[in-house]
Figure 1: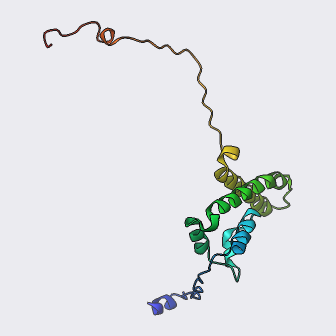
Figure 2: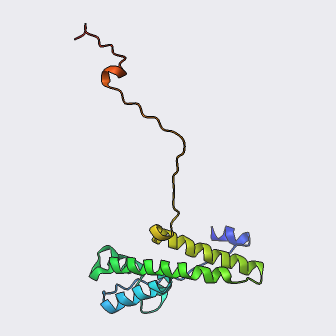
Length: 157
């Protein structure tokens, strides 16, 4: 099959095998660092890509098993990141793009931060749905006998 692809001018791309995930033992210092960096707006994927940092699946396991309160601490870090992103929106909106590409990039940054803020802090930044009704509402209360037009089948009783 490789020969067919090569005859058509296609070459197979090979990728290096990913490094095996190193199981990290939880330490309070490492958990604090991850949470602080998430709160500062750094994506978990970037944090975990650095040498010496645990794989994201390890951090998710720490949260799932609530190791040292990691679930609540990570949730708080994500909420703090959402607040940070919401604060950055005005500054981003005030920027004047010089090119069309820069304008699209800026729009994407704004939309992403808005989305994160609305999903992580829906009570504060989510869409508010407000229902309003106008007009008259008439309610008629009737007894069982009146609803049956006052007729009861006495023969069946």
